[in-house]
Length: 254
Ligand SMILES: [Zn+2]
Ligand SMILES: [Zn+2]
Image (cartoon, rainbow, N blue to C red):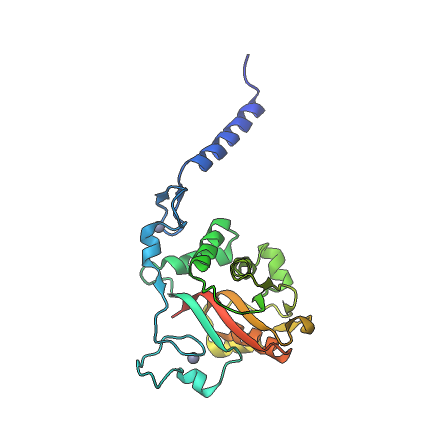
């Protein structure tokens, strides 16, 4: 008795899924196979190639400082204009140009941003969870929101996924409704600071001011490039009475 072709297709599909489950997965950075029980979803070589942000950093915006003198702890830009956030910190640096030597984190972030790949999101979340300081006293974790239209198109907000990880780790409330994006701005890649500032001006609003008034807020995004988005979110939150806004991202463009 022959097997019904539909049954055969079904068995093939199930077989593939079982195999994918049992066999090692591929490193999202370089594609080598890694056993599922290995800690960390990046292979050790890719993990080792990440560039942690290292002191000295600007006390406010977190950009690397040229001077190692303890007397200088602000960058020129922050001296000229004090940011609305208290401090912005990133775990790693990454390069924004596609042409340079392979940059694992930059490539994962770009692919994660432009395509819904849960494995890449999991890698980013894991990097964040591994390195998060746990002694913070924030009241709220707020992810940088997407405009509803872009959320609909993309299907997920990468910052909200990271915000959920941070809020769980810090045992601190995740607030995704208070801060909203009211203007859909072009993607921030390949834009200079001035244009970026103009684009994000008044792009955000606080829908429930009572939820943020007097609160210490940790704002979460995947990357910080020009800092214009973080500044605009922080300014909007502070105008609604947030006591403090700090910014945490996985990576910072350098
Ligand atoms: Zn790898
Ligand atoms: Zn600075």
